[in-house]
Amino acid sequence: RGEDIYRRAELSCIACHAIGGAGGKVGPDLTSIGASSQPDYLVESLIYPNARVKEGYLSIQIGTKDGRVVSGTIIRESAKLIELRTYTDEIISIPLTDISTRAEIGSLMPAGLVDNLLPDELRDLVKFMSVLGTDPHYNASRSGVARFWSFYMVSSENQALGVQRVVAGDPTLADWKPVTALVNGAITDTTIQELYPVLVDSIARSRGLYASVRFVAPQEERHVPFSFDGEVRAAWLNGIPIDVASSFSVNAADGVNVLVFHIAENALPHTLRLQSPGVTFLAD
Image (cartoon, rainbow, N blue to C red; front, top):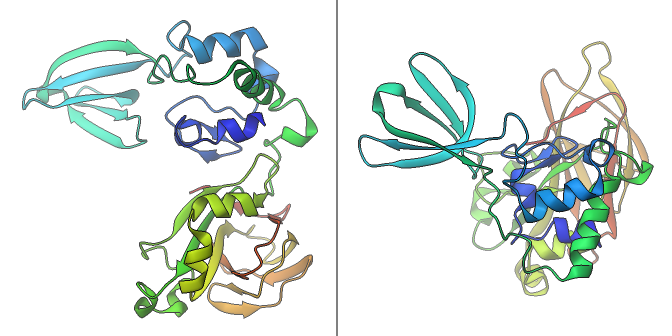
């Protein structure tokens, strides 16, 4: 229940924080927050985010001579410029000669963000955070699990762009939608339905629903084994058809590889989960 609350769009937790490398970089990484922080600290951080700001995440507000106001955390500062990461995870470089005002403003996490949660919901959220890195089921520090996926629905509006570009995982296609897996690495049917709120109507118009992950294989071993949970119609590696089962292997190429799965639109898999101990799954 706490993880469901953490993933609510209105709280923007995923947009600002990463777990297991997947998520935003605006706020501190939460992969092992439960192992390093007591529950009372977590409660205080949620309700009073400015009480104790973690080192390296103190945000500043900069006013420029042309009238802009930019807020973010400092990534790098030199004698000539300053680089900030904004709350939207955008990197902005500002020459020091353009700065008119500069002030510390505390945490980018706004006060009152959890005020609309019911007491039970706040407890569930704190419980979820407190087991990150301490409970085996919520240990995202283990590598070898795909945590960042992208989904693409081929429709009458975009089908002219071609399905071949989709099965090749072409990242320039605008309709790819990013999805962060649960801490255990699963993408659920509920997650997909939330991604496409009018899924039933969308499926009626759909020409295909596809999911992709990207990975880099170790240089010394190009024959890569995978474990896969989920039912799919077909799959491709770098645009070439492959056979997929609960256990399968592929011959990976140098550099970034793309696995694309064709999902049955009329029978969504209960879970999608992809693992391989030897590869590095990319998180964006």
